[in-house]
Length: 88
Image (cartoon, rainbow, N blue to C red; front, side, top):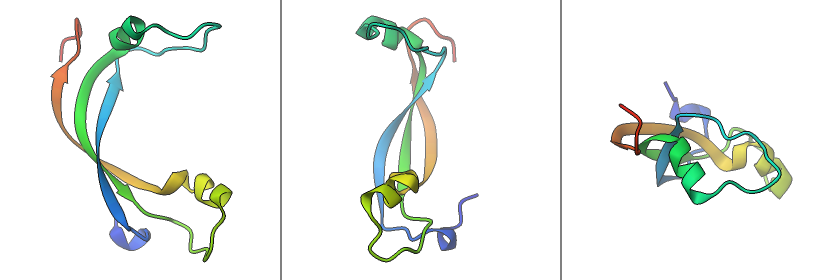
């Protein structure tokens, strides 16, 4: 579980989580919208907990980036729906 005492929580954001059914390895040209959509297996609602693990006063942007950009954790909710041909 996630303990609020481990993080300096300062907010929460509603998000969508895309669970991939297959990977999209690097390739020379960008993937098409259709290829990306076909690789998504399911979509969930989730809540991102915004906070910091470090205790650095006046942290620089690089220090905050190294701290997962203030993403303290994610609470994933129920699956909203399956995407295309994938069975869930």
